Image (cartoon, rainbow, N blue to C red; front, side, top):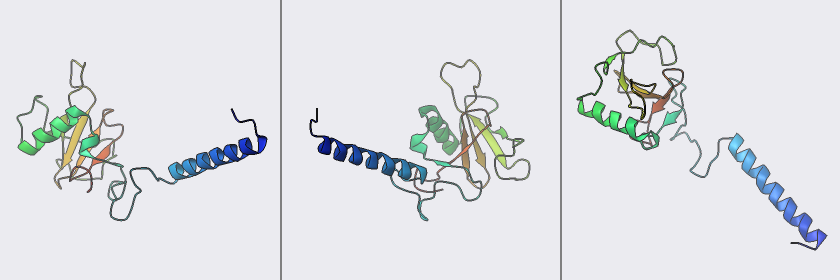
Length: 145
């Protein structure tokens, strides 16, 4: 315990300053892993959706990405069907542009809510809440859009 009031005030001021700096950094998008730069945006400029690295996806989503890269075989009969984009969250495209693939959800008896949606332009999107929100999967696994 600190018995000197002057020392206690100095330590308190330092702690408060560190908290303020941490709060400011988080509000302005800074993090220990780096900041968004012109070369490494955090959002897809076309869709406005946040990027997610393949490595940050759940294991089952990474497995689905591998199956897509191989062209199958897919575990669900509906994998590869046209995704209609009725929610209008993804960029507007002609019908047939997007296709959806199931991401297995442990404990689910049916297809669950998780999907990867691919576009004809090689873009990929991940949803874990049955199309309520999406993240753009980075093309090179984490450093590219």
